[in-house]
Image 1 (cartoon, one colour):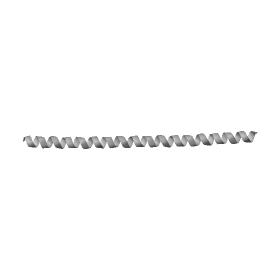
Image 2 (cartoon, rainbow, N blue to C red):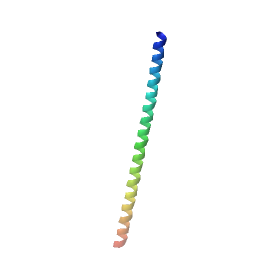
Image 3 (cartoon, one colour):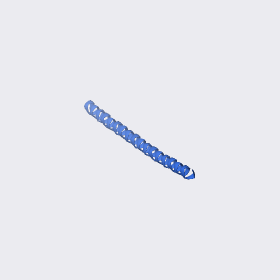
Image 4 (cartoon, rainbow, N blue to C red):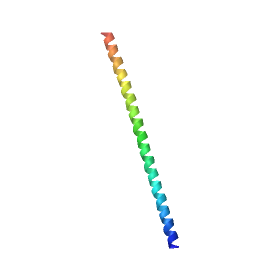
Length: 64
């Protein structure tokens, strides 16, 4: 009986460790996705700003 309880306890500890690892992987993946999304937004914003600045320069040159 003691061996059976010990075996069950070890089994539950192993399962809990697997769940912790899965949660850590999930958290890492979510952080990566968030970072990638943020970088893409920054790139898009930078591109739009550059286009607007270029258009403003062209308009200024045309007015002169």
